[in-house]
Amino acid sequence: MTHPAWLLAFSDNTKNHAIQRGRWIQTKLLGGVIPDTPVEVDARFPEDPALTLREKMLVVRKEECWRCHQRMDPLGLPFEQYNLWGKHRTTELDRPVNTTGELNGEAMGDPIEMLHRLADSKHVHQVFLRHVFRFFSGRNETLGDAKTLRDMESAYDDNQGSLKESLLELLVSDSFIQRRKSPPKK
Image 1: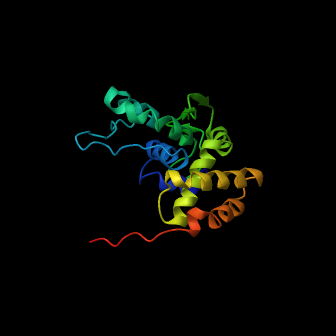
Image 2: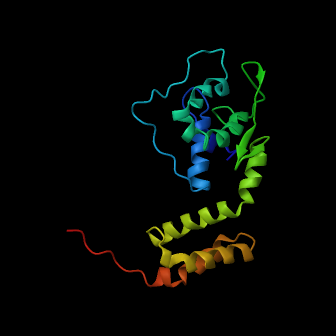
Image 3: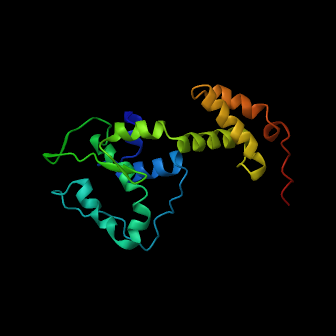
């Protein structure tokens, strides 16, 4: 997530986009759901060129905005350490860049600290394995797939995070072998 390609993908033509970066982490790594911006909301930041992005983002602290933004902004703000092209930076508008953020209520000093915490998170591993299950099975998991998901997680944990071993567990599972065709749509 410190690769320029990822950072650029979550920027626009003129600036970083901490909100998009945080939303991606919340939805793809943490398995959370963030609703789309309501159409009646003016989601533009102030145009003041003297404000840093973090200062412009204070507008999302309004109660109706903060309900969603509190789950993504603290995850994306540490990546302000990188400009819109993914190049490391230490200043924004001749001021030091603030790289603090938050993960599960705990303060993070910079994106590298956050990445280590995410990489070590059992929850993130489980979300990843659910994505693997969905991709290879071509469907979402059901309650009947709980054993397969547990077996995939055990294989992952027992083999130092081996995708190969957890995928093998999926491919030999009843969930995968005994798949049924969906009835044709009428």
